[in-house]
Length: 138
Length: 171
Image (cartoon, each protein chain N blue to C red):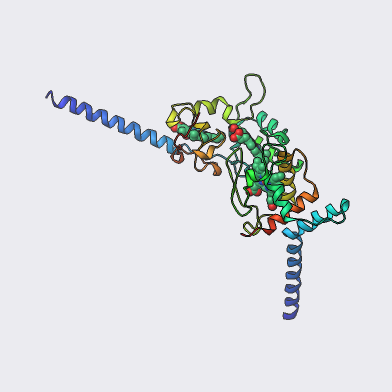
């Protein structure tokens, strides 16, 4: 009887833990995903934090760079260029909510790339940016 | 006799003024300027680039028009997936102003800060609003409600929480 209960408890815990592990996404998941996507067209591709930083901090023909709102320091608080609203840091080391959900990451890459570049970002560009953000200390 | 009359009159007057002021203060306190923004998806999706504005400050036509053009939202791409967009539209419409907020051209106004109500409530000289304050460095835009309404992010526009920044207008 007692053992039985224990087994049920253990099994339940394992199922729960498994569910949580599958639901949570890590920055490394995004790096791997974008890198794999980029390799479909460029097999030798490897993400570069250095390229990511350059991409993030320079303009691309428009008025804004990514840094206009997010600053050049991923560990710092940013400020929306139009509204002045504070934007929490981008580096996962400084803000555990970053690079943790596909829904959020894809939504914001989609919007912000259109605002800054007038087009979607390529998987290679996203991989580089993620690599740079992951590299940033807190 | 002649000396007491004005004194009494003054005292009576003072009483009336005090009562009036108290009445006003009470009325203001009673006026609960907390506006409904209590919807988790609305707050997170429409409160990321600016504070979540109170649905009660625009009519249904304005909200529907805004939600139909999120990909070109005041110069920004604010697009949402269809499902989230439908959920938020429902909340906005259910809590919208009863009055119509169309402009003189008959088209729905998209800015709260362009509506006649807003312009009247925030006219120059009214309760410390100075010319140019909305374009000043400290405020930047009339849409930056929280620059003056310190609890705007919580939907609270009570008068006691208004602090107008020093006018830093440079123009």
